[in-house]
Length: 462
Ligand code: SF4
Ligand code: SF4
Image (cartoon, rainbow, N blue to C red):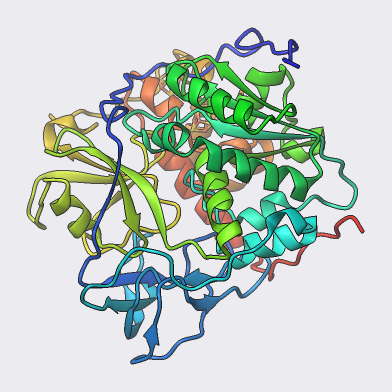
């Protein structure tokens, strides 16, 4: 059965069309070797940092749990290689401040083949078993949010989920890792989709893929046909940034809007990214934890751009050297983790690849936003930012309040909480006002002001 109810693009005209630069779309996934040291931060997810369960000097095998989850929104972490725990302490991280981490020195000749873990019969698992197994695997959203996957798949007691929405848009420029996963691991993705459907009680799954990736649609459709899955559908959606955000994709697929402050579950939907569910489809049957991920290494400063399967904890400097982009601390270049729109600029070359890093992009000085003394001018009230904001916010007013540090008003009256930092407003602003950067600061200030109570799991269906 094919769904005919989509109103793709008709109700939703916001968003932008930046150049795509998806030059690595044809590059098959290659495996990166182990770096001499792998650094596993205890905080690679939202929620409290995990607790180490190993000691300095201890031998570990690949996939062995090295840190346990501390609360509902925390996840365990696993050794990315067989080796020795060399240190536990503060290390540079992509988040900025140094982070408590476990440093592992891989054994010479350590392989990247299966390690710790006992294969499971996933067909015999109950929804609760699947959720626990996802939690035990340390899965977080691999699209960049790093939200724990077990929490995302847990349906609150008062909700009834009917549809699993799978995000295969990969709308950020440069990034192609999800595209390659859809091409190379479609059967595994379908297995992960099936498991997520059972965990959430979904009756159907819709995989939305931007229409600039027709080969991915074909690949997924072939896997659906092979699996004889009559309740899983793949649907092209218009190529537009930020089509991959939850609200935009649901709008594109179903023509419905998630209300302000609400989650997709309020409409009976749960959403996950293709990379996340492909990993679930691979790890759960093997009974393993997440020890590696696929990332795109690209940008004008990279000589061998491509898609790489990288052991978690690999230092950025090692990744860049492997991709033909060695840089030192004095290079006039900019390193971005994730996509250029929502990614994060990092300064620490020692910072490791973590679960939420989907790309490593290297830009030359002349590629940067503020190159050439690009100045910021006062707001001219042109309304471009309002036109582009996919959430229907008023970035102009929010920007003016941010400049005056009136953060509470931003949150209470102008719905700052609905801003998901897509950067569309900054991209279109003719006055070069760094709007999204201001909003990030404001949100951080508000977060820090809020009480930090431990997270507890919601009540779930019996
Ligand atoms: S960054 Fe926030 S305010 Fe700006 S366009 Fe995106 S959602 Fe709207
Ligand atoms: S796009 Fe820039 S100049 Fe135009 S209204 Fe928004 S903040 Fe002001």
